[in-house]
Amino acid sequence: MDELSVKENLKQAGKTTVKWFRRLMIFALVMFIAFIAFILLANYSDGSRTGYVTKISRKGYVFKTFEGELNFGFFGGATGTNRPVDNVWIFSVSDGYVADQVRKASESGQKVTLFYKEKYVKIFFIGETKYIVYKVEPSF
Image (tube, rainbow, N blue to C red; front, side, top):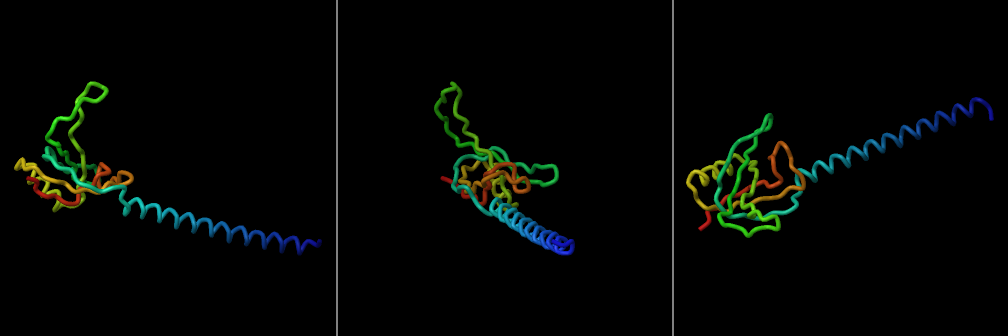
């Protein structure tokens, strides 16, 4: 082989390597965006819990979120550790209007049903918990 064909082969190999590297980077970027979208939009579960709101506060260093506690209002049986079952559920509220409804229920001592969506992971700018309350209804 002459020196010119070796240089051409190396040049062609370099172009192929750069092309595959770019494809890999684009694929990694698309997968990262898909993962972030899944974490933000997908829910692990949804449901409702009924009880008395004992606390609602706005917390956070940079991203202020509404955090609350719901007491189920009944006593659970003892667990294997000889401690009573914890009847307090900790939740987050991302909507200010819903947080205001929760605050009013807390102030009045009214029994409420909180409807929530559970995320796969905690999202720091949405709330400090995986449970995001989106609706409040009075319970009788």
